[in-house]
Length: 122
Image (cartoon, rainbow, N blue to C red; front, side, top):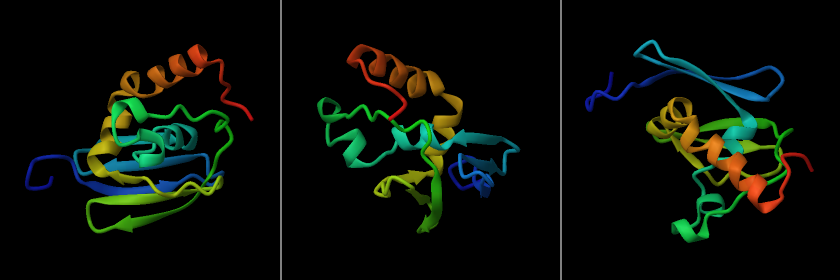
């Protein structure tokens, strides 16, 4: 584990269909995160905004694919999606949060979609 005792990634693997990213940590944890989930929860300013009031709900991403993953220093990666979104920097800590706290991300996203009358499909 890293100096601050947070699990450190040991593997990142894009699925053969490009619909998921698997991340494994030195703690033994292993998670498969769907591309759609990663895309709609992007930590980018485009999605998160610069304040909570600027947060965007991104519809129509059910079939989004991961085109490539590139390292950003030794603390994160940038994911390039096939809809050309690539401005989110995913830290190891954020990956773990997405994996272990889906109610704080995915379930809230689905509720926002319903409230706004949006669809996961194009």
